[in-house]
Length: 269
Image 1 (tube, rainbow, N blue to C red):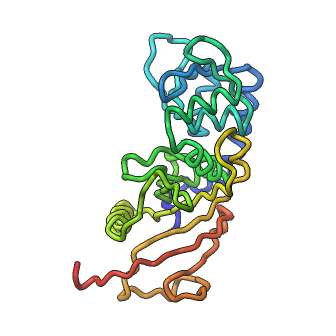
Image 2: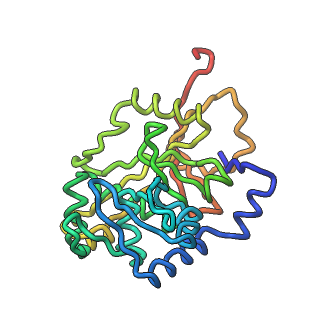
């Protein structure tokens, strides 16, 4: 399932203005202005001047919120977004609810206290962002994230993302039963998205500090329903050792995806 662009010129616009360039411009702007976000519950509020507001919108970080100030635009950043800007891009400082500047270790501990699965979610978020995917909340579709090739104004989201932890400590608890797998793949098919499962392996590193996450590994798997009555000759795939797994390369994203095909009998639907 390839990208679904929203207009004739959308793909050309995306190629001309790559997301990596937009994020770099935002990073430079935030560093230059020494921007600070305000920690507020399970989100971070960021006040942006007109130029930065445009860059935040173009780079798809946060959601604009209505405020009384006319000379500034406020944005609400999710925990993963805020920590990515602070830790990975090193372009945002964050002030705690006590008005004191927080260091990375304090911020990490706070976010883990607010969200037990934050380390794995952050690894998944940063993994996709570093590959220049735009990552937004997937709550509307019953998944953890959705991933876009470029700005949502230009293209529909391509992947519905679930985060899973390898081993016995998976606190997310998704797709552990076949009924859950079938329900999720049917939903993704209905909204024309591919289910992407990111298996996070902590490699016995724990989550004491954010540096531990750098040693985590990510295994990517796509899961989709397969109708045996549909011709598959147009798809170039390489068969693996088992008949129900295939692997294919996504040239634009650089992601090699293991694909699990869920057999369905269309005559019963």
